[in-house]
Image 1 (cartoon, one colour):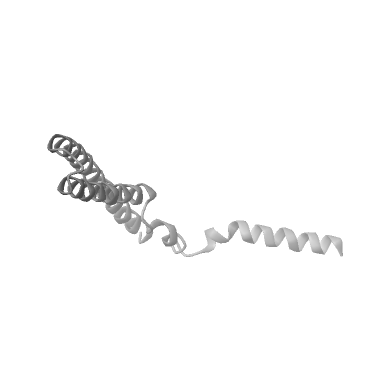
Image 2 (image 1 turned 90 degrees about the vertical axis):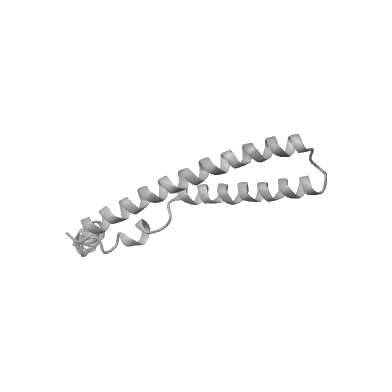
Length: 109
């Protein structure tokens, strides 16, 4: 009886380990591969924060909380950072697009 139970446990474990290899090629990979990468999410969050900072700088300048010099300096720096982030977003989106195309091609081979 003990031998039979151990044999069933071993067969179940082997089936569990080998199950991914029995599935249709690529069928279970779609779940994670089409979620937005964390790096891209972080860049988009940075973009939102920088754009909010620009709006706040405008408001602070209009209400007299910032001098002309401070406004120009801070706005220039924030715009430069925003431009860098936008460039990084474009690069990451292009990488992601290429990756998804290659993955689709691989799955359908």
